[in-house]
Amino acid sequence: QKEVEQNSGPLSVPEGAIASLNCTYSDRGSQSFFWYRQYSGKSPELIMSIYSNGDKEDGRFTAQLNKASQYVSLLIRDSQPSDSATYLCAVRDSSASKIIFGSGTRLSIRP
Amino acid sequence: DVKVTQSSRYLVKRTGEKVFLECVQDMDHENMFWYRQDPGLGLRLIYFSYDVKMKEKGDIPEGYSVSREKKERFSLILESASTNQTSMYLCASSPPQEVGGYTFGSGTRLTVV
Image 1 (cartoon, each protein chain N blue to C red):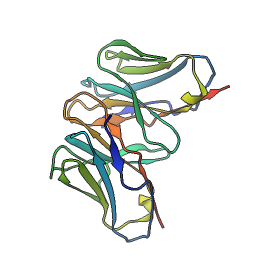
Image 2: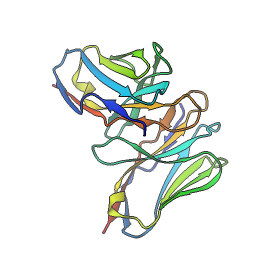
Image 3: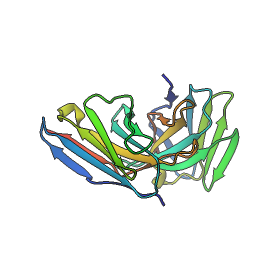
Image 4: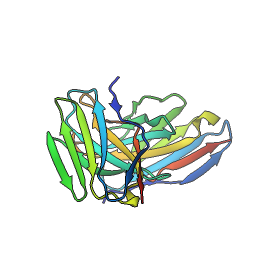
């Protein structure tokens, strides 16, 4: 059973600080990795995709990938109260055209 | 932007009823998926489809069936609704390439009483 593991949180970060969210995965052949943000009562929204080792930056968000360690992370700089949500890590299954989701980390930004 | 539309935002049905959840996408995507999401259990894949009239079982297909008669529409059917099928149901679509994430619909919160 291929798995994506995340700490469920809640992770509490002061406003303006860096929030760091982490994820490990079991499928060594995976090539595509995603972060989704989900507000309470809403559906997941894709915020970052990353396909190669290293960092990928988009505004205040940076995704980091280390395939050797099977580790993906998301950094949110200058955290805002509107960043309070559950963040889902997702990994494309290397043997099937589907994505495996982690159970999510709940992030709370305190003013 | 890809749009995935789920027909109902909230639905209340009685035990034993046959329930249809509809999902339509407007970007000509081949792949479509149905998930349910429950607190503490995350997203669980029910069924998916790679093309018209094709379907594949996900992780929890029991008690559900699907229909894909047209490329843009993927329906989830609860043959005889039960209270343990009370959940948030999410439809998603994606292009056929082996890259790219899913686009989700806004979800249907189903309550079975």
